Amino acid sequence: TELVCMEICHMLVLLVGAVAAMGSGAGASSWTVTVSPAGSLSVNRSQLSAAAATLPGMSTAGEPGHLVLFAGGYDTDGNDSAVVDIFNTATQHWQPPSTLPSGGRGVMAAVAAGPLAIFCGGKHAHANRTARCDVYNASSGGWVTAPNVSLDSPRSMVTAVAAGDLIFFAGGEYAEDEKNQSSDECSDTVQVLDTKTLQWVLKTKLSQPRKKLAAATSGHFVVFAGGYLSGVGNVDTVDIFDLSTMSWVAPKRLAVPRFRLQGVTVAKPGGNSIGLFISGQGCDWTCPSSDVYDAANQTSPLSLINMTAGRYEFAALTLTVGSGPDQVVVVAGGKEPRPKGLDLHALDVFDPAVEQWVRPPTPGLGTPRFYLAGAAAGSVGFFGGGVSEAGWSGLVGSVEAVRVSKV
Image (cartoon, rainbow, N blue to C red; front, top):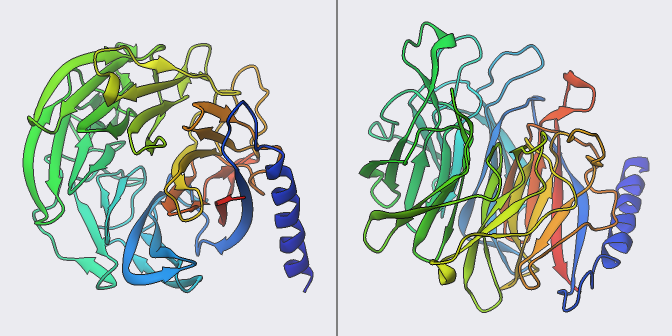
């Protein structure tokens, strides 16, 4: 009873505070943000990956149901985990945990495409990287046997983005000699997977190798921004792939070179989507920069919209406002900038209707954390795992649900 009361009080405080965030800037949309506990992982871990696969034929509150999968990562002892915790948004219950067929690992690429959740690459805690990909099908409720779905070489820190039926896997880190992990190199490889056939349909290259880059889509373009290249440092390159011709077009530049940034696709009112490249490590440690790529302005440079404060090793999700069609971007977690000043509980919300960042005056996440994972299921974003302010001895197991609702 005490726990239930605490949760209800927590949600009420968040709701009251979030209402005050509306109207931050002329013409701001009418939406609220609430945060509530959503249970716990079966194993506390960090550097895990998450994806939300659609449940065909199942819905709740007018929204499609999803299976939210939190996969892999590293536990408190530094060992890799093969555990996959699965939350069913239609039943609001956790299913019995599953296991990654290719074994435990962290820093995997994770992406959802309809009923599929796909986890590729990654690094074993005390061993080598892997090229294997594991595919979960929410329709059948199990792992798919797909022996051809592997990266061309063992890589970790690969960036993945879905574009219709295609998934792009770009960049990452590999070792020329997997027995010598100090020989880390960055990859320029981009592989494209057709999710209808689970076959690779294209292999191409970025303009320069890099890891911890970000990706998003806008119109018929797939955009890869920033990253880190050994021997060079932070990268400002923005590579742009044209889906209509299946070829690269002239690259652009970020306002500030940086890596550990996040990329999301979000729809503006009227349906035009933009690619948003958020914060990251660069500048004087962290950057509050957010670069916007808009396919409608393909000939123009990326525009710049600054956040309240920079962060890195955070999670960013695009959520619908209620049942839609409006969308916003929610940023949660991360590490503090230097000088310190970021409230790691705080959420930042980007409203594309007014192209502004809003800091809802709410307590935000109940447990601040970095190296967390997040997955979007309609109007609800699930943030789980990570490292607490106590450091690596304080791994987090809680999962928190952030919901965006219409007023």
